[in-house]
Image (cartoon, rainbow, N blue to C red; front, side, top):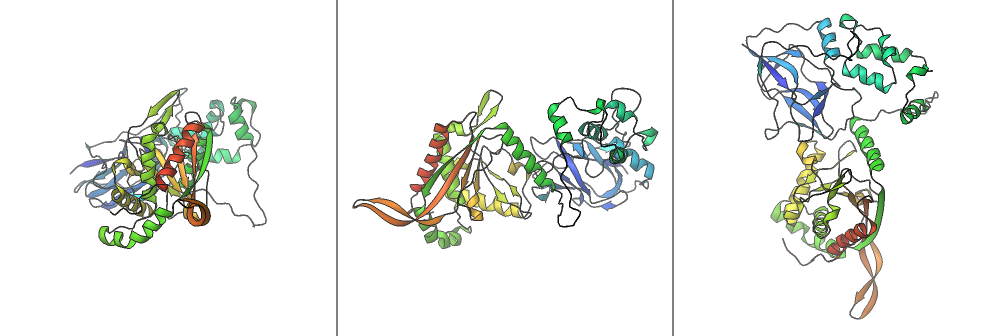
Length: 452
């Protein structure tokens, strides 16, 4: 009948590319509508791409670990009646080399996996009869190098002249990924003078000694997973970007603890939701941001971008042990019940790896609860491009001085440390400290007599 192009779907406003993690279906396999064809990953979330039609996989244009731009054709599906040719080794090799669009070392972060829902952008389809191969030239000479090969060469400080000497096993002698990796494995440890980077930072990094390997078997080497690699990159980038300052206060949350203990059973019975401390913290943060809007900003060079929306990200644990930060949009527009529903829903779907890409984007401020791990305080790293992040510690009973009409008394109170890390480029000690104190004031003034 016809052939249909499977397009790399758009997974969010700021996402321009995705990495192919796994082809669930191969050439010649039958697929039904909405059946998963492949798994992809962005720097935000992992997803399963469903088939837009019923048919047979006729051609796969990219391999696993390829980084593909949004909107590019990634596979061809033949509908009923269309013949599908069996894949050949030569055609697979050609696609393997010519279809690469980015480095296989692209950062990746396993933030959860889900099927693309009907409300999310679906894979686009278009009628076609032929698909031209994709190739990339290095701009000099007659030899072609894929972006993947060129990127590997750049990372390994291989000059153009040296790259020309690498034997190629691909079509027309083209250098494939396997060719350059094989070359690197046999490459001499002492580089030629022409291959030494003129960038002092790059030279230092390339000449740094590798980690020692235990020959006794008492050391285990574990490769970072995709999410941990991206977290590592993001944290290092944040420290390089923002001069971090952290302020601390201790807050009396006795009224909040007593109120929650009193209403949690009736609250769940009447609303079908468990009431936790997180929505109460978010409510106080949203109020304080309205009082100090310059906390709700980002930096673009020498420009300060003031955000009118108050979108609070909350760090949530994934089954893998890594963290993800779903975002509550318009937190200042919600009451405590609305915040509770949003917090519970996002936390539940985070644990189930079912978050949508747009639900982890657009945050303007982040809250992290280190008290979940029994820690009393922490110094969190700013979630770029935001300029501040608040950490709340474990709530513990402590003796504290209480002012009463009869004078000061020592009583057992529920106390909690809070810490605010902020970007000292745009948030000075006065603003950061005042904001943090205002959040504490709102928590201490919590109305323990209120009903929902």
